[in-house]
Image 1 (cartoon, rainbow, N blue to C red):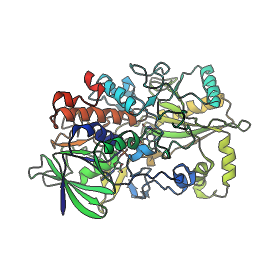
Image 2: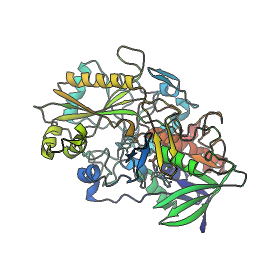
Image 3: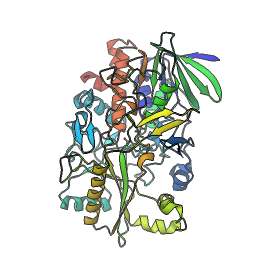
Image 4: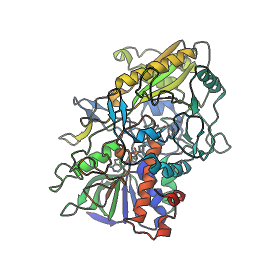
Length: 528
Ligand SMILES: Cc1cc2nc3c(=O)[nH]c(=O)nc-3n(C[C@H](O)[C@H](O)[C@H](O)COP(=O)(O)OP(=O)(O)OC[C@H]3O[C@@H](n4cnc5c(N)ncnc54)[C@H](O)[C@@H]3O)c2cc1C
């Protein structure tokens, strides 16, 4: 087997891995990113609803199995930039309260081992890196902070009317924080209606590829595409990772490095550790706590649409509004419900793909033009609630090596109340009909929590800098570390923690002199 040597190996190039690669690019160390997918080509299909929603051109064809052994195609993507190529780029900070313990109707959301103040400088840095636009004064749940690096994306005219209507209801709509590159400016983001779930053909969406991997490559970081990390190879005593076995373009190669950062996403990072079991780590690498793969979370998410038969929605870019009035408590109770945010416009074909599965797949005859006419008169929303960690919600390997995702959603009563609030809100805005659709337990887009971080090796897999407690040179830097899922989009928190970990690596394992260690990150000046 051919062997290659690097100083740092990063496995995965999404929100976590891409960001770490960028943050370490200037260290002068030999850095390799191993990415199982390829570069997403710039092509007309990027913005084609048929290619993205019907042909599933960019989604993995892999099949996972659920608790009952039923196969399903996960909503996830393997390519440079990971899932960030398809994200809606809604880039939220967790609320300050999310870092503490929170009582929910269905149980508890545990405290994080770090506070909002620990992460705040890295959130600042993350917002600069991903060019986040927002307004720090409008959201009643906004944590303490300075201004956003860029002003909010203005609401389209039709959404201005929606915002005014929400304010008349006594709600506090606020601009969604969005990572976009020069929105509305010549040569910038065109504020089109093919953003969320589509790759940006002109690279004006702030994804991990555009903001991090491309500049890192230019700075000398090596990226292997179509390279699948199969297993981590440990030292004889099991205390260090010595190499990564990789299938690269169909050939087995070995990469040796003194520092290994796993960033495959919450499901695949846990799977890689489980696949790397040894006699010293019989239940999977770094799994002395027994928690590897456990506590899987995804948000409870319902797509909603208010339908106005006599009003064509003229908004093209509609995804600019959030309502956080129910984030910390519902109208009638003391429990949190979650967040409501406006969504990208649904295309007729997207609605048909979903509609064709209704009624047991027996109503596929409704033509696309009918869906086009329907969605032209709709305004789209997302209601999102916190999913609570449960040890039986977990990722494992089947006997034949496939990924099994055992997941039962919880906190459903709170989510149903949020959906009722959203329905009421839309009806008060004049909607004749409110449609609701949820992927329920098959929604893997906001996967997190499978390698929880914490202070104690007995109750967590990673320490507070995402180093595994059991294996000294192994880090996991992606959505796996979340102790709780909160109810805002996870991306910015993954990026902020990746920057915090990269800074830690510069000062510790990479032993850079203090000046060089502080080199790339202005936030390093105010290091927690
Ligand atoms: C349609 C969609 C919309 C979304 N919208 C938002 C949003 O608006 N805001 C937000 O905050 N979040 C959003 N998300 C979620 C967000 O994209 C994820 O939370 C984030 O990308 C997770 O980052 P990660 O680093 O954990 O994993 P990923 O970004 O998924 O990166 C993991 C990478 O690892 C690679 N990989 C996996 N296994 C291996 C292996 N064995 N060897 C080599 N490489 C491997 C994968 O190919 C991938 O590139 C959205 C997701 C989707 C799918």
